[in-house]
Length: 238
Image 1 (spheres, rainbow, N blue to C red):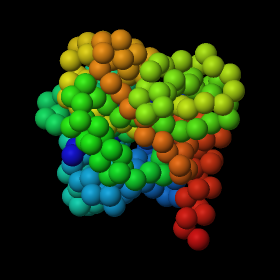
Image 2 (image 1 turned 180 degrees about the vertical axis):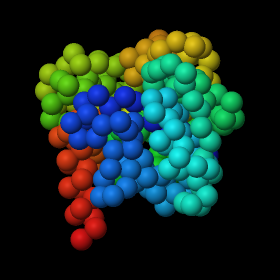
Image 3 (image 1 turned 90 degrees about the vertical axis):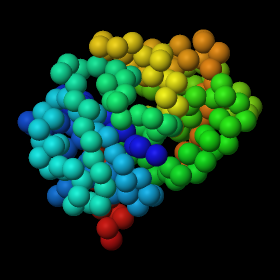
Image 4 (image 1 turned 30 degrees about the vertical axis):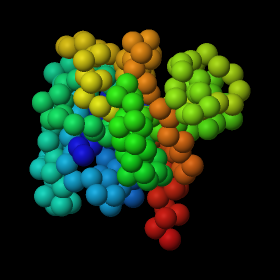
């Protein structure tokens, strides 16, 4: 299974920490954040990677090349203009033939991706309307993220982006998707998978299921999140 990493972010909120580098390349203990993601994927058997790049893409290409140094294969889907999370996935369509994993290049999840893939495949084989599985995180305050409305069996019923106060389940930015999802994404314009495409998928009668995440989760797109991940990796190195 191919793994797509959405690595085209501008990283404007991290300019105080790292200037002139794309967000996924901010250094964490001497190595880019994206390298930590790559090694996590490789350890779980994902060796076919697609980096969806845009802003300062040459920094990522120069560091990772074709992936030989890490024992993986890396292809690049380059956006000439920022296309959003869904647009970036659509832009990588030539690399997608079967179900695929998607990660945000600014989030880290302590998760068994293989278990998530198995769960997705089991549901998809039982019901062809299942075209996606979303890793979800329980939080005490969903205000900044928006909450997901879930059925008892884990199916996602609705997306309440930044409209719900208090505890709830939030989207972690990791997905297993079927190629059918590509047909719901417009070509050549900025589109959000979270705000535009997932609600459309539900409205069209397709099914998305949740996969609860029990381990560590952080968005490194803010200075606070970046410091949390630095602390997390430091503790693991001890």
